Image 1 (spheres, rainbow, N blue to C red):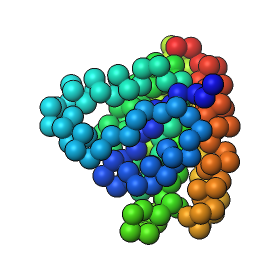
Image 2 (cartoon, rainbow, N blue to C red):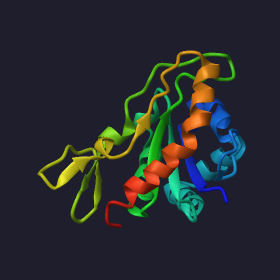
Image 3 (cartoon, rainbow, N blue to C red):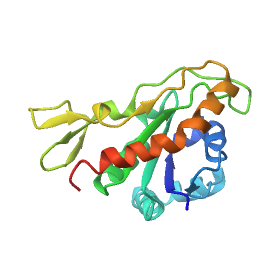
Image 4 (cartoon, helix red, strand yellow):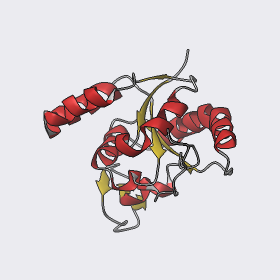
Length: 181
């Protein structure tokens, strides 16, 4: 039986690239949301967005963060990372800047979004926008893999992600299980 995963990404910039990864078909994921559906959710406000995210994270074993050029700065991607970690789910990032968008363009590599979080090793709380304050805290980027395919051609990037995505998810779940929930 395939793992169930939640895909997190910057909808406006990376929906086309994200759909390529989602269509690899290795997992049961959350159903793709159309631009109209996402706009409808967004118009209802932050609480509705949080509920939508929480409902869609339910029953998933891992969050796959698809990292594009601007993912680092996205409020809802950050919320999804934090929420997935708090719920004890595996968390893994995959850089998708090497995949082409609908116009056949690649983008620049973005900053690792996990760098904006730290966790406490003993009590396992997660905090955003802070560097580790003491020896019990560690930056999430030291724990969660942000995989960067080593190719420049979109087809090779896609093939590499397709080949490695299952192992990346299994590794993320194994890593997360090493920390208390």
